[in-house]
Image 1 (cartoon, rainbow, N blue to C red):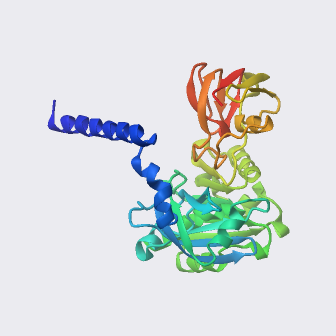
Image 2 (tube, rainbow, N blue to C red):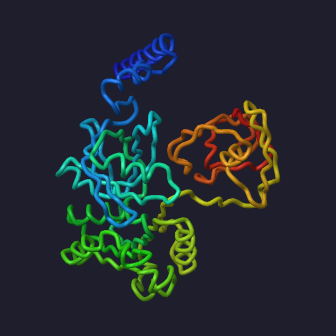
Image 3 (spheres, rainbow, N blue to C red):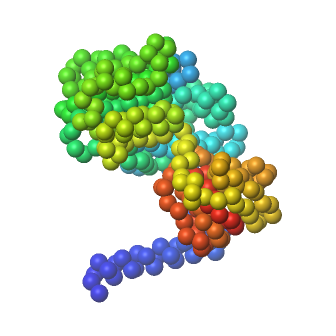
Length: 375
């Protein structure tokens, strides 16, 4: 056995011993998790998960969009342009978590120690309006490590970015990073907005485009030009079939753009997209059956209709159950549970399970046949 292997085994054994001790004393995997509520009495916002960070400013962008300016704690590991992260904060004693893209660039973070997250207030939302009010005078939050692979492709081939509404945030990060680092690839952004009053970051983008000839910005005012169409591509980016296509925005827009550019000849592996909200249920109906889902601990059954499948989380809630959940889009894994039997389909990965016992995520999973869940 090599010295490195020996050190690795010793480290693993020590880690298991620490976990065993913590579980024996506190019924938690880490002693720090047990102490968390006590420490929060003295240090509000402290958490064993994420990095304790400070909100410096809340900046209004439009009537329903604001930007949180945040100084991450020193242990935070940074991010790539286009990635998202989880922000957590205490609301009336309850911990609220949401995922948002970082809208500022890594270069800005390196220069200032700050990051920005631009957030649209959801009309019926519980958290997005509250965050703006809660941090109006600053405050403490917790940030997760950055996640996601919706980042600029490694290739230097031209890129066509198509954004709708709040889907602009990862592209703002990418374009600012390109401008800051001298990235010379050709990029064209088509940004669809509801009307002129919702033309987010217009002055900023136009200033960047004026200084960098390789970056082109086109605002598409939906009130004047309507929704996305092939004609728009032909008018504004006639060589789009030679571009890598990146799409971010509401689900219907992403589905429309994917279909249009695919039918126009852009290969599927040249199309990148990120849903700004829940991904749609896309599965082969011929493989899905009407089925019953048994929520074993809850003592209830639910019927899953093959013609109108709903997620297991929605089925549970329809039967009065309240399983733990967070993002509802397959990111935070808070709704993970054990499937004891049956076949399910993961709408996020596009994979069917086997028939046996395994961990699944309720919010992005639908039943393919009769399923038994430890819920």
